[in-house]
Image (spheres, rainbow, N blue to C red):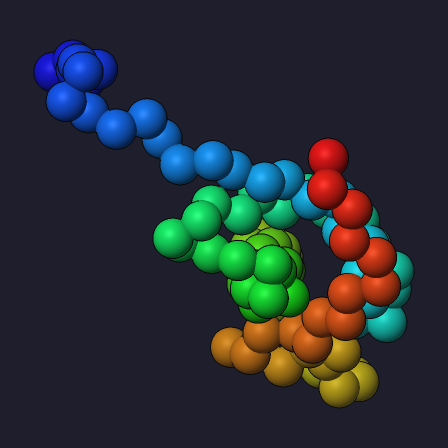
Length: 91
């Protein structure tokens, strides 16, 4: 099936991409986040980053062999980590 781009179709919405410096899980990190009007906004960026981190952590834990817990996890399974945005720059 081929997508059609005729005169009756609206162009895709404008997108804004940000380089974000943030703190999560005791570390300072950087990532890029694209915000699409009508779907997301600047205030959603911490939630978007937290969801990404939770997915990455779950994938890492699933790939690791099981081992006995000798210390409490820095991030409880099934919960999104807390993200604190330190710097936000439009790119």
